[in-house]
Image (cartoon, rainbow, N blue to C red; front, side, top):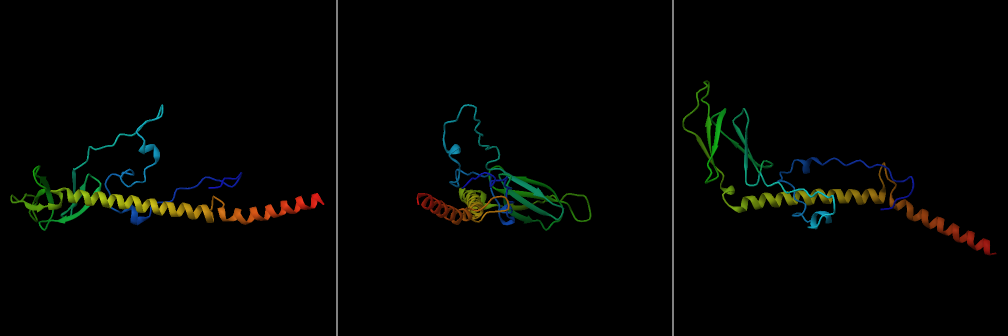
Length: 193
C-alpha cells in the first residue's frame, strides 16, 4: 500500500493451508469464481501477450485408481476426488466403465490364487449420469477458490496494516507522519517569529 525507500523487501508466498490444499477441486477457473484479473476478463490482447488456452481435454472424464487393499478411488476430470469404493473381493485385476452409463465393472482376483473371478462386481455411480453431480463439483471448486482468495486477502490486509517480517506496517506511518507534520509546523512558526 505504501512504498518508501528501504521499507519494501521481498515477500515470501504463504503456504496453502492444509484444509484448502486437500479440498477436492476441478481445474481452477478464476473467471467462474469472479476473482479473475482484468487481463483474463478482456478479450483483447496486448502485442506480444500470450493468452493461455483453456484445457478441456479431461472434461467429463473419470480417472479410476486402484490400490492393493481392494479400494477404487474415482476422480472427475482427473482431479476432483469423488470418493472411494471398496470391493469385498480383495485385490482388483481390472476395471471397465461402460460408455453409455456411469457403471463400473470390477474384476477381482480370487483369494489365495492368481485366477480372476468371472463374475464382476458392479458399481453404479448415478450422480455422474446427469448434470447435477458435475454442477456440485463445480460449486465445490468455486467455493474453494473463493475461500483461498479470502484467506489471502485477509492476510494481505493484515500484513499491510500491521506489517510482517519483511514489510513495515501502514499503521506505523500515520502517527509518525502526524508527529513530523507537527514538528514542521513548529519549525515554520518559530522561523516566522
